[in-house]
Amino acid sequence: MSTEHTEVAVVGAGLSGCLLAAFLARRGYPVALYERRPDPRTGPVDRGRSINLALSERGLDALRRIGLDARVMADALPMRGRMIHPVDGEPQFQAYSAAGDRAINSISRGALNNALLTEAAALPGVRVAFDHRLVDLDPATGEMTFETPQGKVTAAASVVLGADGAGSAVRGQLLGHGLLRESLDFLDYGYKELTIPPLGGTFALDPEALHIWPRGTSMMIALPNPDRSFTCTLFWPTHGTASFASLGSPAAIEQHFAQHYPDLLPLAPNLVDDYLHNPVGVLGTVRCAPWQVNGRVGLLGDAAHAIVPFYGQGANCAFEDVVELDRCLDECADDWSAALPLFHHRRQANAEAIARMALANFVEMRDRVASPLFQLGRRVEQTLERALPGRYVSRYELVSFSTTPYAQVRRRVRRQHQLLGAVAGGAAALLAGVVGAAFRRGRRG
Ligand code: FAD
Image 1: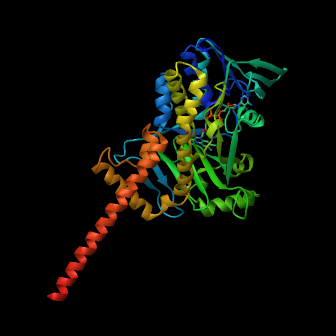
Image 2: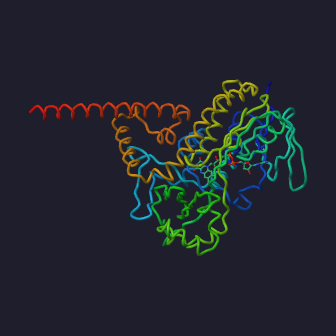
Image 3: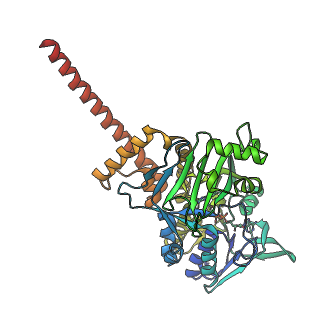
């Protein structure tokens, strides 16, 4: 199929859709970018999505390729580690990297989306249609139907790419035509956003850290914003005796936070109001296959593989998808019928790896980070990283500060832990031998 000049439709002008449109336009494709919302640069801000997010090396690598990294990073706030807030006592800082110099970046989701949209829309060949919600798709012909404020309209494209998020309508259409299998695993946890406003004109907490209040069955995190506020995200079961459903009255909310998050209460004067009015978002993992049909319809980003947010990698992974799809188009000389299957083949194991690591990190963040044993383990790990630079590298470092494919990260970390186990076992055996010999000598003497 010669597609050099045929139009590609990208459904969803979110983070991955805008980046994808920019990459495709740079390859010379005419691109129609369809978005169900009005133009976010002029319309009201979408509530209920995370306000800020952590951008790390994978996302930055993608932005660098289109020269957008400096513009996005101009408003980023680097976070060099975790600040753990116990119920009693002082907060403790844990650096993300052994040398303490590496940082993940808190950025505004809206500002990032707008920067990508502006970049894509300015490129020759890109046409953006807002207020276009995809409601129907014929995977055989590429004919799409959209609901718009003026009624239903149809359009067609040689290639249709679904970048329309976790609840993807494109995925739904492929499912409806029996062309795809999917599984949706929802957590019984939801999330709610709360705000810590600036205090006396400055940040109320250290802005160079991602703040965590690990509480076992619940957890709260806070990321800094350029206006010197923090956005907190409370993760808690949606139902049960200790859950979002269990707090109804302002007094109960205040009492709960006073008991479990005592240092937050004086910093968040609108806490009760935020709590009562902000929605509870759902969290889950989306898996599906195949991610493409006949080289004509494809999925990427959350539409193909939404994950839980506990590694701060969903958007980073979605950006990496775009880079990989671009690479596949290079290798397949823009033959979509070869490039889309290759893309699925290369990315699926990586998406599955980060999905699993993100779930595992939830347990680490809500529970283990507070334990002295975990903190000792991190110190041992960072000592090894300094002693064996490039040879022993922690999982966090590989995920957040490298572009090593996620599946390779999992394999490498497993090998490192086996080695560590063997070394620890050997050391224990050696120690037992030395102690035993000394004991025997003692008995003899
Ligand atoms: P989206 O950003 O969801 O974009 C989809 C777009 O498609 C939207 O604009 C939507 O309006 C549009 N759309 C939907 N349906 C239709 C339709 N039928 N027709 C037309 N348009 C449609 N990731 C990180 O990397 N770091 C983080 O720190 C981080 N924190 C997070 C915190 C929370 C609480 C959550 C929930 C997620 C977090 N993520 C984070 C994940 C990240 O938000 C997603 O992975 C990322 O937004 C995926 O981008 P996307 O372009 O695939 O989808």
